[in-house]
Length: 124
Image 1 (tube, rainbow, N blue to C red):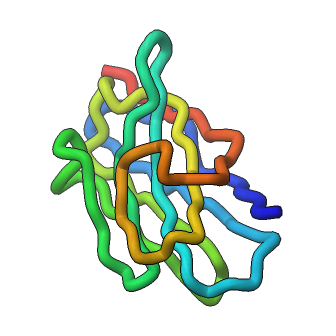
Image 2: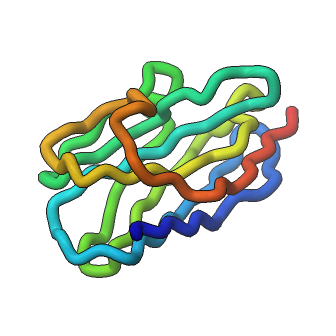
């Protein structure tokens, strides 16, 4: 059973930065894709960024140029560097995992495993 544990959330002022981490465990296959999603109160969960097994990434238009997704395959760890944060980035951020390592998708239904989330709050 794949387990995902996020960390790195917190409160920051607009224009600040945060780095989220997600450690994945409970699997042996080396081919997988991972992504970051977020959900604000009263809104649907939305894809933020995703990276496939080959290191190719995709971003939501709202975060392009500000967020960077990366991974350390040796540590099974996914990162999300968030710069120039805006109040509208405030949300619970979730890490997601799929064994479909050939996809880089922001569609939540493509992912089978989810973390518990880490809260990001950006004040103006």
